[in-house]
Length: 314
Ligand code: ACO
Image (cartoon, rainbow, N blue to C red; front, side):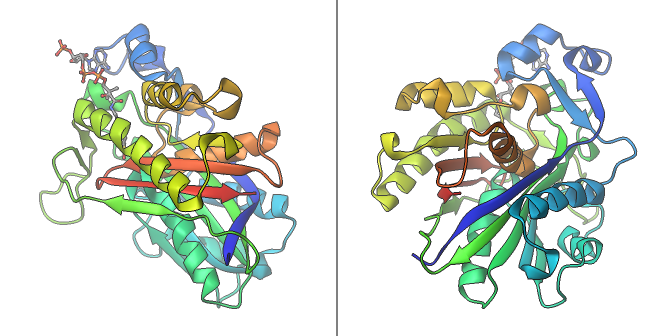
């Protein structure tokens, strides 16, 4: 009890579509390699848009879909590592752009690709400890800004986008029962910071991260199922971080999850890090695959290394 439900979703992606064919003009690669190794066909990259534009677009849609007004929102968390500015945070910029109450708690959070789940859990705790009913949670990334265009094994993976969810707290709702974790690792996945000599480009040991992911996802699923006392059949839908279609394929095979209970949009957007899970959720909502009353097991993993799972209700 004392939990949150998702009441509205939204998404916003840049207009420019970059195909696998386009990538062959940048690095020594080919369309078939990218599609077969990752499941990616195209991704979106910023041109004139900003991170802030994507956040505003996704958040406005989520608030409208939830049927509430911005003044009702008690907190806003943006999961990101690529905001336009470090200060103000993307969430503070949203406070201004959307006219959220000055009393709403607005901040950014970085847990790489698991950021949206970390933010959902943080928002649940925050609303539980306050008298506010609604929170706004976003995952938003402009990874094209930190992509190493000379590294063919990573530059083909990443895309830009933002997804948002309005959550409602109620003492009668189930908790999302988030199971989150990390172990500090600088070698497998790294993006530099603001210190001298710290290059702000993504570097990744793809194969090792792949191995980590195929262990982390089942670990998170089992943890959430055990915490909630549910089994796979009780879950209406499964949402996975979209890092590589092969990771999802391995997991659904292992758990015998039927095709109508999971979804992949990595072919369209690539890996959008913290935005990937809310982009999926927003599309599922529009497609009617999840609706009010749905129970959805959400799993993410990524840089940090971080991992997380939660049972999210709508
Ligand atoms: N085009 C053609 N060939 C390529 C390309 C490319 N774009 N990239 C690599 N290759 C070559 C390599 O050079 C290598 O060649 P070699 O055998 O002659 O040395 C061969 O393809 C195989 O390379 P691998 O790195 O072993 O390829 P792999 O099958 O592991 O796929 C990939 C790489 C797609 C990165 C995969 O490892 C992966 O998806 N890893 C997980 C990534 C992930 O989940 N990240 C999540 C977190 S991201 C975040 O937090 C921001």
